[in-house]
Amino acid sequence: MAAYLTYWLESVAVHQLRENTHTRYAACVDRYLIPGLGKKKLAKLTAKDVRTWLNQLRTTCQCCARGIDARRDAPRCCATGSCCSKRLSPLTLTYIHSVLKSALEHAVREEEIPRNVARNVRTGSPRPRRFEPLTTDEARRLLTTAEGHRLHALFELALHTGLRKGELLGLRREDLDLDRGTAAVRRTLQRTSNAGLTTLPTKTRASERRIALPTRCLHSLKHHHEQQQREREAAGTTWQDSGHVFATTQGGAIDPTNLTRAFTALLRKASLRRIRFHDLRHSTATLLLEQGVELVVIKELLGHAHIGVTATVYAHVRLRLQRDAIDTLSNALGSPGNPKTARSDGDEPPSCAALIR
Image (cartoon, rainbow, N blue to C red; front, side):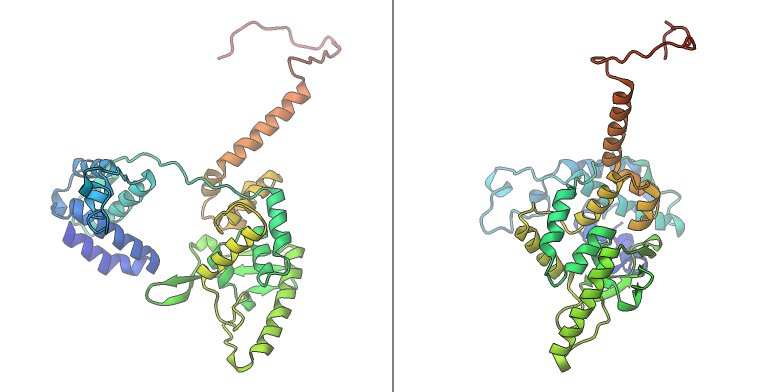
């Protein structure tokens, strides 16, 4: 297994995955898969082996298993005889399991093994990561505070369209059609360990899309372009034209980490609770759902590959809207505490005492 996983990472996955994803896969293989299953024969690996290994991961303190406590200047776990019981989360266990399934799936395709035994092991469905989107009042306060900020147009565009951080930073001037009021999302900007700041294709094929821009964003983008022209004149020969809509004061690409810092500072200035930049995307979808926008429209705007993804992520919002709709119907029909007696016209069906199952 150790030899096969190394081969799979270096010869197969490296050509199929993005650099950051491949880095996470490699860390997962080195940290969990090889130590746990590396000595097993690939052809003799069974579902029971995989299940036993996952159960061991689920119950083992990671400070002890990975030697984290031994490397500390002042041990406070196993070395002191007091285990901190640092367990892997269900989400991490599911991710580790998915990496193993991907590796073994390729072994099936290359006819190294007859079947993928990892698919016969169930890890359970982890609870989705909770997020707290901005309310309407909080979103309004954020936009008000962002007025006058150098990246005001970016924050406004993020909250109105739900674009990802990399998609916003990857926008180029030729992607915008301000006359027609549209933007083409074709690429994303990311920092990788080897290439540094680099432009990559969108997350999925469905993420490559054309979206409509609201009038408010069009005004902000035009103002931002004028501001960028003034910065270009002030920079003179030091200007580095990267072609991005949102760039630094010297014209270069904005590092995603620096955008996160600016966003955190903006939240603090607006006296808002701290959220992730990605929660702006969740806020957009939630606010649209609460305004009665169809799920399929939100799916196209966010660039989800399948509408099931949109429905699953925002199931709690849809449930709340369903409850509101049912309450509205209940009020219309009259509550038991305040019955409304309608005048009988003689057309009502006879009362029925049969049980309804």
